[in-house]
Length: 187
View 1 (cartoon, rainbow, N blue to C red):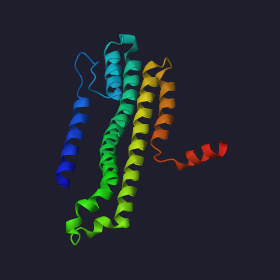
View 2: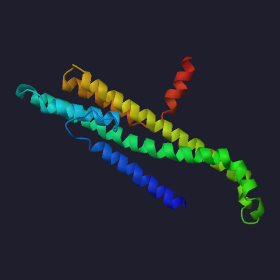
View 3: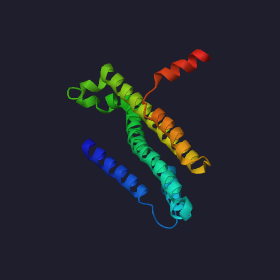
């Protein structure tokens, strides 16, 4: 049962991300896409409409935005996976006390349900899934914000690429407990 649920979830999540990346028709303004997908499609449209003397700069800018899009899309997929996992584990934590009552007649088979160790483990897993969801949601939002900055910026692509590279390095760092500790020291 659980294997079928996980398989169905992964198939649906993959289909959503695949469908999101294939929005390439004339009307880029459709609601069934992420902000990153909208922004990369808009950047492609700007590249296609660039004047011949600006085409090299437009292509470099599109490349820069597409590079960020790859990260935003990856984080969107991870965000969705951990959202659903955190939801499942959150419901398990919520419903766990009821399991011992439901399986009361089968205590010999389901004795482990009453175990504090198992309940603590499920709670810990729920917290971990929420932490990963929050982490990847923040990274997706950060990447999309960086895409907006790149699209609306009037700065040359060479200058813009330096700023984007610095920001992408920040995104790639992973969990940053140091910045959390530094913020608390300043308060």
